[in-house]
Image (cartoon, rainbow, N blue to C red; front, top):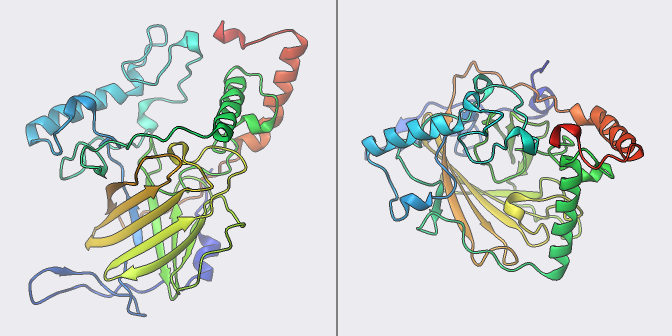
Length: 347
């Protein structure tokens, strides 16, 4: 059961009234303004797409597909991703779905997925637009300290996958319902690709459909928090550059877990740009930088499409492992008493 989200936030925020858009002398579309004169980027948007983050190797050098190529790519990708085609004995036609012998369990069938079934409207072969090859830049060799942290996380994940977690921290942040798609930058996932944007004087709020938090972004010029104060979603500050909201985020928590693409929380920064380009669409662009993870910054561009104004945002009541963490740890201790080293279904 899910209930409407943002009730408390909406009551706290003064939601700006949409001002009808007007065409400029040149005929170009002009974004509407809020009562305090800022570009109006409010609404509920979706960014479902099957355009991959990185350009596939077999499409190297091809930025955009022809309509015929795009139709063929979409047909093949939709078949590859179809959970209903999974064969529990032979494995799945798509990468990442393990056969039963490796513990593969499908949560539910393809009907419930909402990943989208098309490329972006411009038929790009990657969401990454810089570097021009559409690929994530090479990684920097991790320091010995990061290698130890990564090895510890991998060991914990392995214990959890085997049904033998030592501690609740063997379970990832998403499994523990701490954070999910609310951590920037925002990328399409298997479902719940909706975000709602609110504005009030001095603030912009962005709430995802998946998980229970919202980013409250000051746009009043205040400085970032002290570097010693780190948060799950980082410390975010915004400002306007013309019709674009520019959002800079740093100060991510570094005590445990894995951030975006295994970035280093201590040195990871994100710059996001939200530009209303039409009455029903926003260009969402993000640049991530971390000199201890990648050899250079890189940028992705994802179109956000406004959905039916009557569409409601509901709370994603993620609480399963607030209960099941007890069951999982109890089960692990019982298996150890029985000298089990893996789940019976994995043998």
